[in-house]
Length: 449
Image 1: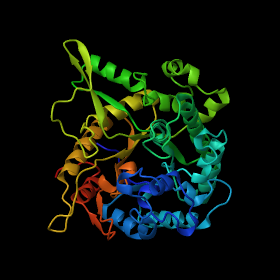
Image 2: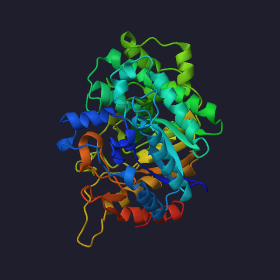
Image 3: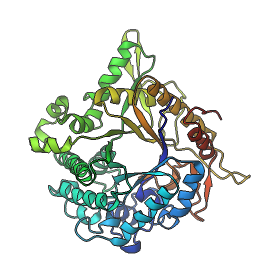
Image 4: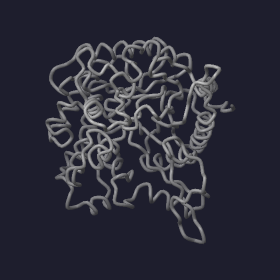
């Protein structure tokens, strides 16, 4: 079902697991500030210690090895490497990632490196952040440095993770750091600058290593045909890529510029009076050629044909939901990659898929999470279905390797294959982690539980 050299992995992000927020010369990020100086995060929780991965990475890599991971998707902390975001380099920050990468490679785990997973340097935020016209150049400087540093060891790079989240949630509705509620004109400028940053970073990496595989990981807003009728399929595809509401979440808005070199016409028309000035050079930079499409999918929205009419989002009463209150819709991992592959014609890597559940250590000292096993099994089956029908999928990463800080929702949401006791920092591989070991060993053939 899955190709021979398929990358079975798990993922995490620097702010959510590293801790060590002021250790060894690290600068502040926007998340450090909003979590420590406001009531922004649930119950006043912070990423100051998190999973203490900065000090416990060797133990964590051994756990990854025990689970049998073929790959681990990590993110670098930009302010750990550039405390002011640009200029002065923090050697100890680079040294940490050297040690982590070496440990992964020694254990035959392929590192997939994400440059930016939302922990934006505070000092650059004070200069305007993503609104500053120099912000793409700041990111290019950072990308160039880390590419040169790790060129001999990193084959796979992801420029930015889910720009929809840090732009829309961070700059428009204020529910993520830096907690801004900006007018549409400013939001679109920040969006455009972040996409320019992506393009400059992709080019910088390729300039250092032409053989590197570079991708981009937007979050996939997925619609799927509930019954698979031709009318449902066409309408689901239309909703995936055409402007259909007043938000900026439409997939094409964030993906067409990167893969086609132009913003979608319906979006440009809708926001015409707010759009920033955009040059042909800008679009050439944004659409710098990529090697793969990073696909983050957790759930989808059904499209159903009833009496000849299309009904959107009608889920049965009492249908299952995760601890994030997201619907359980395995079909999303078939239709999402399928639609994205058909449109953008790039190999797919599922860079995130997983589930938050109410996990705890039971009386026997173990963490039994049958719901997660069931969830992952169903989703992986659907991904395998896409593969069997010709969708080129090269890897699958569970979110997450371990429980961690779920941004503004704090430590209440547990996504991990590994349970973290945040008081003692004890790690316990959940039943799902042991199950995933079997999945990896059989290259996805044995999904039983």
